[in-house]
Amino acid sequence: MKHPPTELTHRDVRRIILGIMLAMFLGALDQTIVATALPTIGAEFGDFANLPWVVTSYLLAATVATPLYGKLSDIRGRRVMLLISVAVFSLASVACALAPNLFLLILARAAQGLGGGGLISLAQTIIADVVAPRERPRYQAQIAAVFAAASILGPVLGGFFAQHFHWTLIFWINLPLGAAAYLMTDRTLRRLPRHDRRHDLDAPGAALMALSSLALLLALNWGGVRFAWGSPEILGLIAASLVLGGLFVWRIHTAHEPFVSLDMLTDPVVGRAIPAAFAAAGTMVGLSIFVPLYFETVRGLSASQSGLALIPLMGGIVCGAVTSGRLLARLTHYKRPGMIGNAVSALLLATFALSPTSLPLPLLVGGLALVGMGIGTVLPMTTIAIQNAVTPHRMGTATGLMNFFRQLGGAMVVAVLGAVLLGFAGRTSGHDMEELARHAAPDALAGGFSYVFGTAALVLAVGLAFLVAMQERPLRSSVRAAAEEAAGIAE
Image (cartoon, rainbow, N blue to C red; front, side):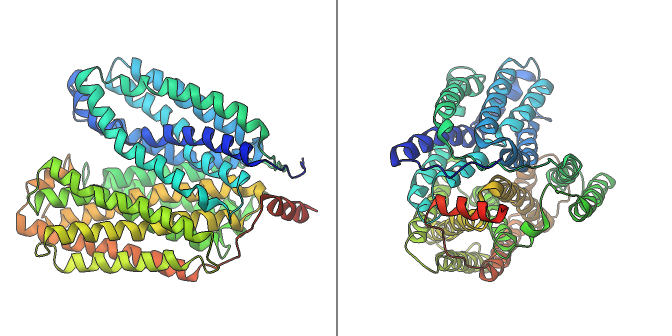
């Protein structure tokens, strides 16, 4: 069913953006707020061995659910799917707070991930529905501020609640935030333009993609930590992921309307921007985990000092995203800031790899800030380029697919960097990567981190190659133009 393009006033757009920013904040906050409360949760339930699953179960479920929300939003509408996402997330938060043991808490966290998987992706899709690609960068500062606030407030609130009140508050706080997000988005999104198109949900294709990615994510989480990489368990999971992935590719070629269409995957913009975003997001997540470990084990900083030393990297990412977003609206060749930033980050990481112990600490921290800025320039550019390349009735699928590969990139790069570090530290498996690294010889760790930085530089170099190859289509200047283009294709 087609609806004529709907003109929204600037005031309408501001109201919609404000509502979905709250939903985006809700999703971003829950990715960071739990970590600092984990020791308290483990002590209360008397189970530390399975404690990482409180985080892992959420991430696995959210990653698998993300592309499904995108596809369903193209079929059922953005508003309905966002409200479902908020409702599932909020109800699962109640289950987390009331969980009587760690096993049920892990199950509730997985359910929470099924809701949280749609919050950020759908918010980005809705922004694309109401703001033209050429104008979208003006909201990039607000988007970056949401993630920056969640990154800073999450660990602080989690630790504060666990220490001074009770750890369940990290889940109860989601209820007022979720209720506010539900009420604000329910009202404002009724004005949202509709781009409905008759679609069929390819349930077998969706199941194959979900199961393949789940098997791969389990292998990446367990490999080198719980099981050796060459163990039957890890090899079996990788084999299962490859077989299911092969069946998914077969389904793409044979289904009448596949879950992800082949023309989208081979599009000269989408098919190259997604690997570039995969590399940038994966490196960002990998560095956020391994840089503090490097500061503690190789440079001798305390846990609090290493946390402070990480701030320039994360702040650089926000500054890079904001700067790139503003330049996108003004430049014809909008790839250039991302390509330059990506190249500078790769070169700096290669420099760190050559001298992991001899660089003065202030110079290293300043270099990490520049690395963050370079990575940050890639993220908004790839998002806007992908959304500019697809018609509105496929915006949800493309945005969900991009976010799925970003999350998958984080898991894969962390696993690769962990395997490199532990390999050079003389370890192959154990219960906790940080514990293994802390008990390794300092010289072996220094050599290991040299290869960690080198591997991160290589990942960014591969992403840069895809970025250079990405087609640079002119950014549309109005949402109406996109809707009319979609209508023309339909006819």
